Amino acid sequence: MILKQKFGVYNFIVNLFRKFFRNLQPRYQLSLDDKNYDINSKIFKYRFKSYWDHNFIVLSFSEIKNNKQILYNINPHDLMTISVDEYINQQKFNMLRISEILRDNKYLISDGSSQQIFDGDEICENILLIDRMCNVDLYKIAYSTGFVRGRSISKLFGVYRKEKYEGNNNIVKLNI
Image (cartoon, rainbow, N blue to C red; front, side, top):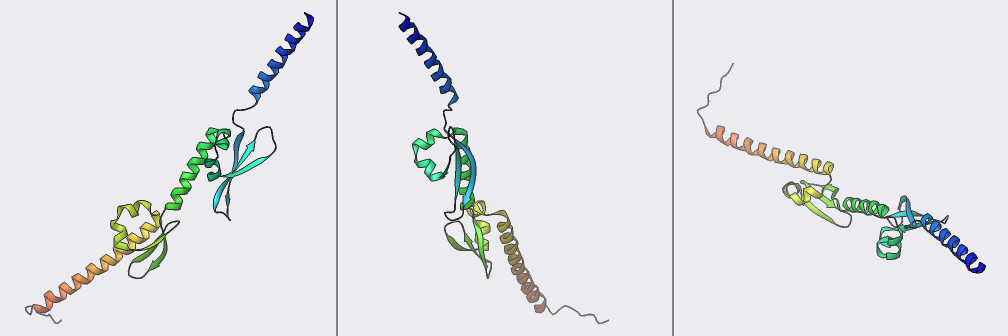
């Protein structure tokens, strides 16, 4: 009978310790510590702090996304932060920029993966291109396109004025 009581007290104490240490161990074993850009692979690497260990784990977004075990062990708040950062980086990667300014109001426009030549008028009239372009580059294109259009309109007025007044001989010149 005494053994049963000791065993019962022992079980009680062991179960109490298990419950106590279970509460100390967090549900998510990995917590985001730092984010770095890897120049060689040209992707962001995320460094995670591991609980109950002095090691740091370095993972890329694709490694996190493709491994369910890692996904279950990362804090959801950190996962949201990583996914928002990757979305912003992808938007920057897809943004169109001027790679080269060519003659006759033509521009070599590129995003992260491709390049194409566009005319300034084409860019100013295409709303889809305007939405994806960097504002500073868009201002440059709009300014030079407006300047070219203004010069062509000025030439047309000059030709029209010249034809109108040369054909009319009723103009009297005043000599002072």
